[in-house]
Amino acid sequence: MRTALTIAFIVVAIALMIVVLMQEGKENGLTGTLTGSADTYWAKNKGHSKDAVMKKVTVFLAVLFFLLAGALSSKFVA
Figure (cartoon, rainbow, N blue to C red):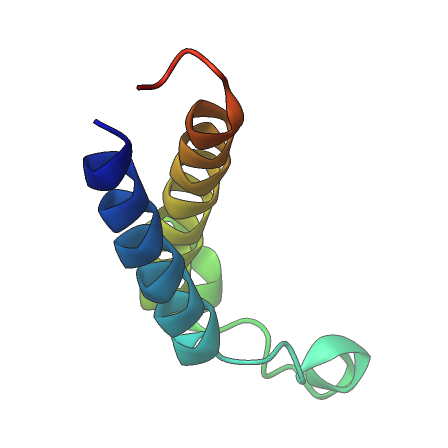
């Protein structure tokens, strides 16, 4: 059981690193708002954009990572 959890933990850790590195930076910030480039189609539909999907995947993998870490650290796993 511990071996399976360890393998799952490593796979989730690698997937989490890849997803975090694939995300784009938030460089637009204040200058994007001042120039008006923040009012794009993607800014209005953030729930369906690539950034929103990447954020949801990151949160899911992070929660799974901590759950697996907690399971591996418990003394009940044989």
